[in-house]
Length: 139
Ligand SMILES: Nc1ncnc2c1ncn2[C@@H]1O[C@H](COP(=O)(O)OP(=O)(O)O)[C@@H](O)[C@H]1O
Ligand SMILES: [Mg+2]
Image 1: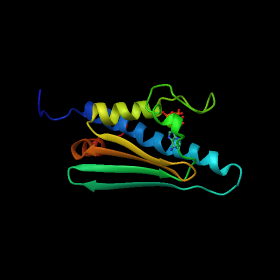
Image 2: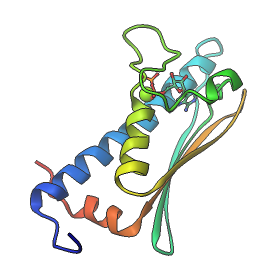
Image 3: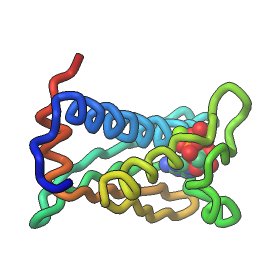
């Protein structure tokens, strides 16, 4: 079936699952920063940016945290992979993010990281998906 108007329920679901993604990335950023600042008492930075790029919308979350260790990098999108202590991490955030952004909405989810400097996650979504998420009523 092609091109029928999305039902209100479909709009609501699109918004709900994308919101979970938008929430998880800054939480991961905050955890990574805590690992860095706990000893020195200074504050870190999380920068959330959005921009339009033709038919795409880009959302990036950049942190000044510890970076992602090389040994972990190939596994961060696997379900239940966490480097955090019990009770703090479930390892489901990035697996869900990839399922929602890439598999469900045809977007991309990438990152750049540097140990001791920080990490930037970048979500790219087709504009149509992003507009659907924005239109949906919140209940
Ligand atoms: N911004 C980040 N900086 C450093 N490491 C990260 C960051 N985001 C994710 N990670 C790594 O990826 C792993 C998986 O993340 P996620 O799927 O959200 O699970 P969780 O946060 O529950 O551990 C984390 O345990 C952590 O090792
Ligand atoms: Mg997480």
